[in-house]
Image (cartoon, rainbow, N blue to C red; front, side):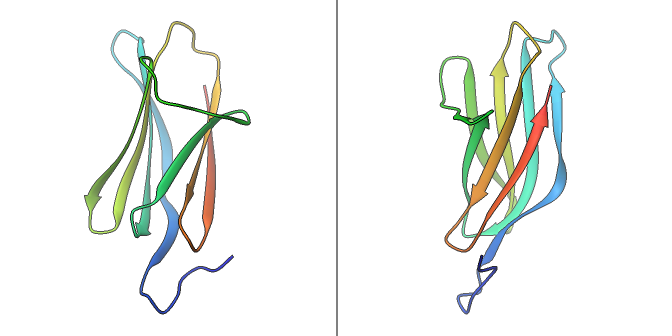
Length: 102
């Protein structure tokens, strides 16, 4: 794994623990974590070993909140609260993985 280079880039690094927040009615679960990276990271979410894809019930966003700081967000419309997800953040230098369980 290469953690940087002469290009001044930053390999993806989680800088805050993942947070899981339901909305007030429990119908939408938001999974969020923060990472530092440059360039903007490519984010993949997994349920077990299955790649999660956007749908009418699942939305994914990567939001730049500061210079080289990103919120990685997965929102799920749910009817049951028994599942686990993991995310993989990568760029050309490195990959980083964190898991969240509900």
